[in-house]
Image 1 (cartoon, rainbow, N blue to C red):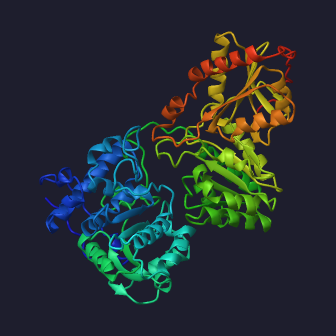
Image 2 (image 1 turned 60 degrees about the vertical axis):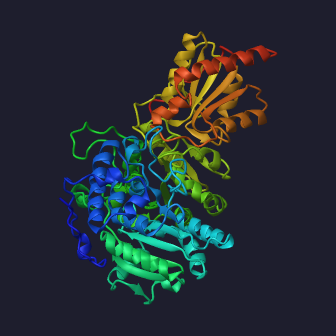
Image 3 (image 1 turned 30 degrees about the horizontal axis):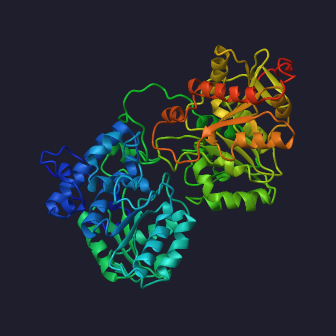
Length: 638
């Protein structure tokens, strides 16, 4: 039994909603026989259709078990097959933007057997991976980069006399909202002698629906007759030829368009109309994200109620704050629901701004909002804020503007691989003059920190939290100058400074040291930068300071505390525990933290060794040991 071939719909909006059927395949499993692109090229038209159906069936079964980006890949099945039938990868370079739509490409380049460990330790990456295959040229999990890579590759091939090598970039319409794409198109279109083929995978959305004038323009282009068009468009005005619109689920039509584009020998746009989640009814019906990414386990299976996440807490509290503060507005870079702003958008639709995949613009737009008398809250994944450091520095901090950055998925995230771990924010953002950075340890402190942050109007504030369940409350027993004391024992020797969500680990570390006969005090500064002056006296009263953070050890909270103590004449040594300065492999968050020895059992012997070295080199005992007294704790965290 073979799949019904979709009609050639020429990309019209009306017929693009037709349903692709996915049925059990009774024929020989072609997918198992695909070891590389040459096998794909040998198929006849009937075999291509059968292969497309088998790929969809395989992805639905496999990704629903392992978790991963299902919707984007169901949408590019025919496009991926056509690319590997027209071009000779890796001699011809095929780039994917963003890389989460490359699963079909991985199947066609011989990696089917590895899908049972998708996005797991020592398994298959959820993005292109140079370590996996020569067919993966770049590792681009951050959007809007492929066209710049393509421009550079085309220049290199031209300079080296290798102009016969094609350069193809598959770009989602959502990625086209990023500024880098237009910087690259400006160069690509201005060099008609250097052919670059840009395949626009137009499904009307990145995570959420694509927004802005570009989305309107692409919608207008969909209504044109298919073919190579000279009618004016934003692309032709930039110097690129335009081929399309083409039904992205008609492999023969896509293949014909790609061959025509290659024959033009100039920069060209191939406009493919696709449907995210195509061929899988649950995805087709899911209006929010077309099953952009799913967790492990088949959708619809009975599961326990999910635990409350940090994102949930933020999303609930920002709505409460906005109800009292009409000046509070929210900004997202194409990730409204993933960063917890769905309820905010429902309650205050005129006060939430989705700027597309444009982090740099998001930050400077926030600066403009602040200049205009609003207090913007920019909710963004921690790893994506790296792209807008200059804007945070020169457009927000330099102007001393009250902008609150809420960094979701800070620290180790794991599943999405090395690029998505938010392990640089504490190091980078301490460089912003006037910045205040909070790392809440529990839900109550996240709510409290968020309210404190939006009350700051003369400089940037930052709140960061991980991708995980929020965990139980961690209540302080006392407070010293704004530093929360979480645990204290008589005659303390070690001061443990906990950063954010690692509070439970630090308390367990205190217990582990106590079992070894070493007393420790565990504190949480809450606002980790600037360094709280109360830490000066606390550090002086202990033999060693230990910091534990979910961030790069270079320039992190521990490094900042060590520098602060040196500048204030406190010679208590500081030992920083965190993430080493190297990219981390794909694995679960808990597994990665364990592999980094950021567990109490692993930290305790390391602290003991550090303490032994400090005591043998110490010239004088700490006179204040055992004399530390803490004021009564305040009633409760709000």
